[in-house]
Amino acid sequence: MTQAPDDAEARRAVAPVICYPNDSLPVPDLALYAKALAGADMVDVAIAEPRDACTFRVPAGAFFRIVSIEGPQVGDLNLWNAHDLSERFYSGKTRALHGTHVTTGERLWSSFPTLRPMATIVEDSLGWYGIDAFGGSVHDVIGTRCDPYTGNLLSRVQYHHCCHSNLTRALAAATGLSLTEAERHVHDVLNVFMCTGFTRDTGQYFMKASPVRPGDHLTFFAEIDLLGALSACPGGDCSAEHTSDLAACYPLRVEVLQPAAGALEGWVAPRVNGYDRSHGA
Ligand SMILES: [Zn+2]
Image (cartoon, rainbow, N blue to C red; front, side, top):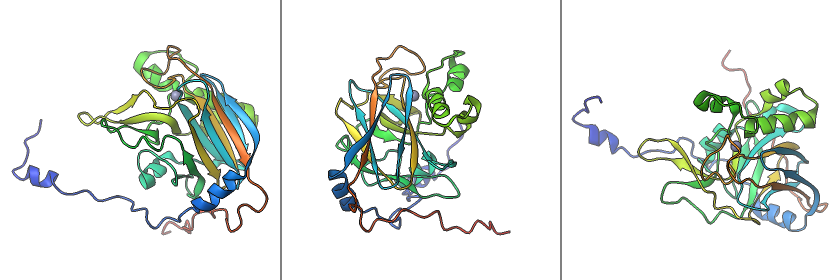
């Protein structure tokens, strides 16, 4: 332990400032989205089976909804530009812009150099949860995804149904890429329905039983043409452990909903980021 300076308490007492004040972000027209969603028809359904993943395609201007159907279950979500897999969901920047957990009105942002909203959350049936006494909340952008490499590092296991592998298999099947090629496109996820936080004493990432129940759902508006992949995490409700077959696991349903023609009058798909990419050279 190092020796604290005389003014340690004064230094600790300095008030924090928000790194990225987000009041200058473009504001999504949630009323327009809600109206379009109310008249939308379900045009496709995909099921992520327990300890496995599914893919789905959502055209720009449509919605997708992730639904808990049989029991409490956490899902790991990847999103790509349907026409260019190099544009993908950027969990870290989404966290920097919106915070550790996301809910209605917040957006999933894409990687550099596009950095634009890929999807906007328009409904969150767990929006009531807020932040609990442990500092936990739902739908996090802090956990990366369960993966067999960390499992091997910590427990020397060869486990093949972590979300990372589930997403890799699903993307390979959807695109015709080899597993090796597909794996490179799998990225840090949105942990749908997962309840997480950081411990106050050690700052460690924690999880706890998800408050999700069958019927709960999280609905997104697709701002660009999307290819999505959703894994039903082997952790189930993530109350105890993942990277094993011990937890009770349930499927998750993904619904794709198409609004009526003309329902999005005035909506314009987001353009790619405006930085000129000259990097000072
Ligand atoms: Zn997982």
